[in-house]
Image 1 (spheres, rainbow, N blue to C red):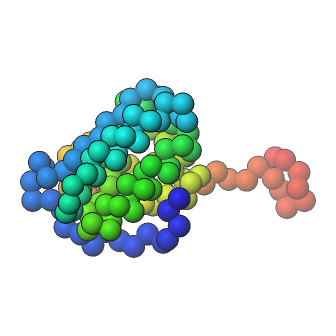
Image 2: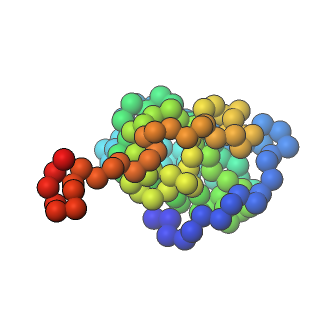
Image 3: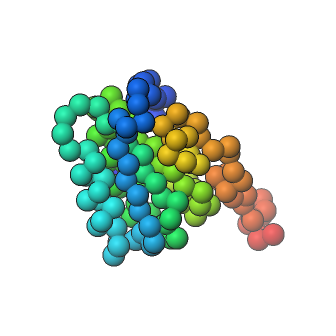
Amino acid sequence: MCAHPDPPEPFRTPELFDECRMVRARGELDLTTLAPLVHALEGARTGCGRVFLIVDLREVTFADGSILRPLCEAWDDCRARRGWVRVVHNSRGIDLVLLGGGVLGRFPAYASAQDAWRGTPTAARGAARAPASTRTADGEAR
């Protein structure tokens, strides 16, 4: 997984929207359905030079932690090539998966591909915050 801390994105925004590569996923993403997304992410990173990759998950109805490894591999590869990966979605569930995987700061939500290209993340949502404990100091559930 992505083990190193997340430095700010120092790399430029592409000159043209056409310089970005886009990967779209839809439906459910889990270990049994993830292969097409993995292949699309790998395919989008073929060739040489910088890669600016937008991953559009707005049509994903369910995602579990299996999305973390391929997203982090894409992140590592794109960053090494002086590019970036940005994720478009509007799902609290995806926020929670990213939060649980410790990569929500690396993959903030973008409302659209255009916003991702510009580097304008969606305003923070309540789902991105860690849930408050339901236990009191003496260990009893509230």
